[in-house]
Image (cartoon, rainbow, N blue to C red; front, side, top):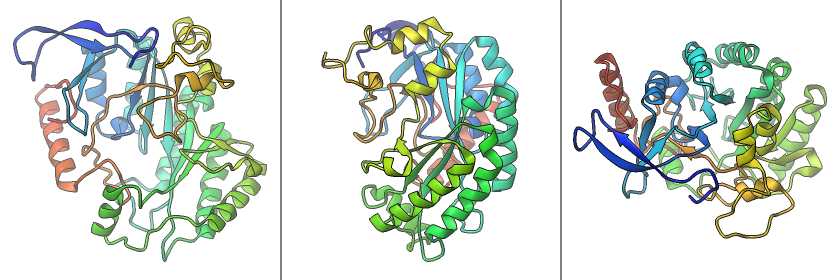
Length: 351
């Protein structure tokens, strides 16, 4: 990716997985790290992340093949964590602070406890407590509530989802400023459909237009008492009539508001100095200059480098798009834990 302040740099590497005892590679040096859309690093790979941060780089492998990409932390100013359970990771926050890195959390709080869709995720009530403690530790502007994805089935109605959102939101709204939600995509993603069928969730389905309108109307009413900024992730429909904006999880607005005191980060975001891939004129929305080309067209996230790997998350949620099989995820996680117990922290999450 050709972004001003994000040029490739030479990177000396050593250690397990290195072809020779010592070599120099070309590494991308992103300003913003995403950790991660592909797996829950805070829940399962927190210590690995801290050790790799100390080492100065990670190696990322595309799920679609191709050569590995080395990712240097040399210019990193911000890490965005995606998680459903950062309880154990919170012990590492002082180490992150000592590195001088800024960070915020996209914290998914659904309530599918009774449905079996997230059978390995701790109970919702427990995670709400973690959400509150995290917010009290780092500030409510740096913890975003994701209600994601929204699914319907023969057991889950729109009214059920609104009731679950009410129960969660009434508890966490004082501890956040933003809510992001998404409607499940099943037909577009064969892996999602296959995982749902394999797990016995054949009745899980997408929303109709009428059901979307019903949910958004109900959410608008709930937000009259919450007062949150609510956006829809990767949603092509215009939901502004319900007070719902277009989602931007790795958010230009949030970053400029929460981390405006970091001149290096702000220079990267500054629209007059930022270069687009095609050199196109600046759009009215300055964040569009920074649109992440690696995400869907409907995704409004600004550019970052994700360092996670598919088929490594042990939440094993039934609707997951990132795991090809439970067996592979379990195998990768077991290898990582064995390495960790032996004091080995390889440069990539997956083998």
